[in-house]
Image (cartoon, rainbow, N blue to C red; front, side, top):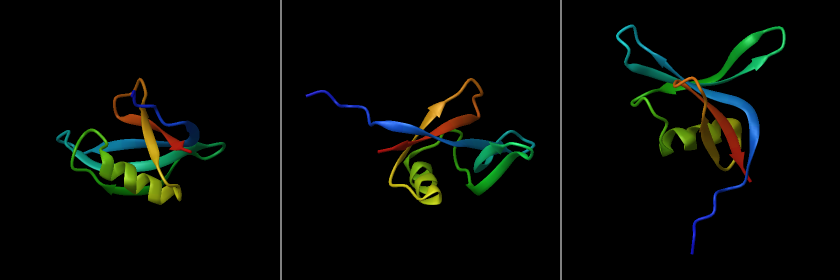
Length: 86
């Protein structure tokens, strides 16, 4: 039996990793672009790695009030789109 990919919908939010001056990951940021305001952060959490793992996915889902999310890589290596699993 093959594994099926979850069905997802775009959320309008993204996940970004901020780095220290030394280049180490410092925090994960959930945010979105808003007309007239620009990028606004919704929540942050300390980063322990440069790639989002299951713990960050659980935190993002809880922050956004959904059951599950997946991250979709973008052309920027420090930004992932957040999609909601339904």
